[in-house]
Image: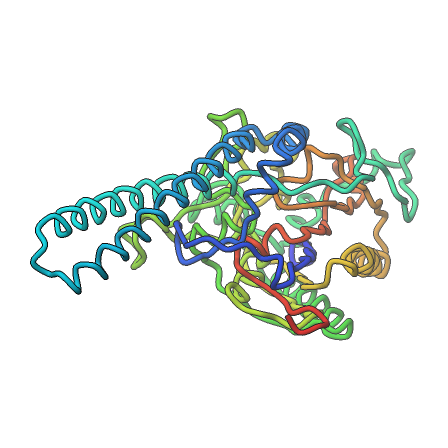
Length: 410
């Protein structure tokens, strides 16, 4: 059920001395990006972006902007130093017309350079934020995932006698898709009677298991700023025109919100977004294990056919999310623990499922490595994704200004 569509995400945080800051140019965030690193590894980063099917990233351009930024910064510092020197001279000779003219010219030059710096910095940051995360060396090459393991039996020879979930649910009277379509359009559902109770029971069961595993439960906001959504690796705006994927994020109409139109509110696609973003701008102690319950909203652009039948790939569903903030050296082990936690849930439910190590083009912008779990759905005669676990390293932490201290206390 959709209450059990868990998407576990694990974040690796940069220590304080490795966080490279710039002034905020978007929303309320202060990303900590290493522009020198981007410049020095532009070719590799560009190749990585293309392999991930990210077509609007241009690391080479970021490197050129960084060089321009450094040049303008040096010029601005020189002119500011000259202005300070002239100001000291004027304090001793306030009636010197020549000094006053020189100081005025220096002030104009500083203002001009500051304006150029702000423009270059803004473009540099926006371009750098489009660059996706690196990928783990063991991520499968090619288009197909690697099957890590399968649990349970498929019973392919008996597939014709199975009814799909919609036939079963409608026979039991626990869903009403027609009423939902009249109210909200296609791909929405009313859970009714035992169906509503079943969803609530699954949520309670999943949250209880998460608590036993050391996670602190949260009920999270269903909306977040577009800048926050973007920082977490979810594109609020479609990149289809640049050869990328259409956005799966719903934006709230500006006239219906209090926030400025340049940073509108969005409906969250997952509680991952508010869970991670609530630590933005903070220095945190590790590890931190967070569980979140929210409604999730997905445009599901491009989904069609059997993938849209019944209650599979809805525009709105309930999901339990797990997030771990952890140290870099613990990130791979934490990811493995999250995958095992997911697998234990589906094993206890008696599902036939498989664990997949996902290829590059399935990683999105933020994931360094991702494992999906697919359950065998006899009525569809196919596998279907029910959960995912990702290691995002420091991708979101840098974009949200989340930091931690080293053992030395720096």
